[in-house]
Length: 162
Image (cartoon, rainbow, N blue to C red; front, side):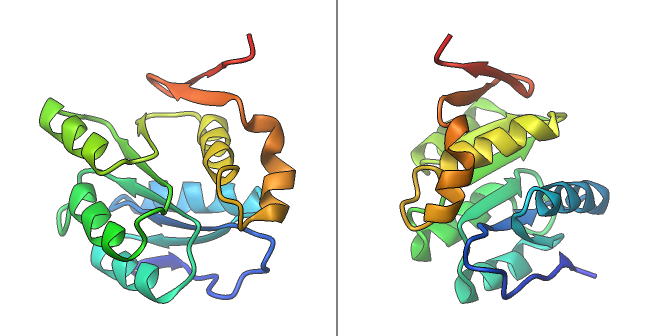
């Protein structure tokens, strides 16, 4: 099944997150974790199916793998930016090469996270990025305590306040 979890009509006060990764185990893990954190999650193994969902549904955040067989993360991001230019995006990957890093920077990707990473670090990054989206007042209130947290390197987190 290409869509691991469908929550097409979540409550308005929950952020809608789309996860795209060709690894079903990781997709399921991320989906379960973020759902428990009160996010509405749709997880796709296929970037093409995720793109269709992104076009047809309100989405507040995209979390995508970089290396996938059908369409890579950069291609997915480029296609998504055509109709959702301000969508916050996190790219996750076990490997990055310099040309891809430059391309991701030019696409204004919100953040990159290196696999493996800690789930709590991912949650903090998502909360931080959602805090900048004014239309999610309820989510902003819930996650505003994380506004000074940034991700570094291998899933480590540092707090700018210290």
